[in-house]
Length: 244
Image (cartoon, rainbow, N blue to C red; front, top):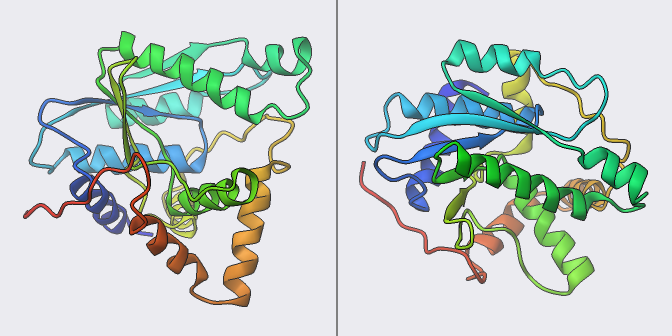
């Protein structure tokens, strides 16, 4: 995927869900994976021409894995001129050595987001951007249906009143296949996950199920996404189309 196409998808999300206001300071949550590095490029590119001016920073919560080298991400942020903070944590040790969690994903996500949001506030940001793409939104809906018995997925924009912080998801219209294409074309410096349960989670199950359904019934994926956008889900903001 070309950068121009990525910027088009990103602006569509930002405009239709009113994600960016004049004077915002947005922190991009960087895991080191393809999704977050693509989001960094997307918002850096958007910043050059978007009519509402905003600041951009990046932050990573280091979970404490051994040999997790973030220097390629530091180099990228330096090249883009984006301030970058790394937050050390003991999350890996807590989950796998102290608590010995057999299903650590939910608690890990909660602890990671807590550390991330606290750092974002210290940095003076009022918004944090997560790199969830279209496939993530559909997979979350499947997980919610299968394991919770409700039709739900995370919102494009969420205000966290306790933190006075707004979460935005500008890649919501971008397919994962396009993220992979962007990563390959622009040779993003992906830092491989060191998590021992990576690839063995319920989310991985939902990803494989979605691929199977779409293979057996072409168009299923897009129909599911349309159902989410038009489903009046609790917590979702209204879509709006701003004139450019």
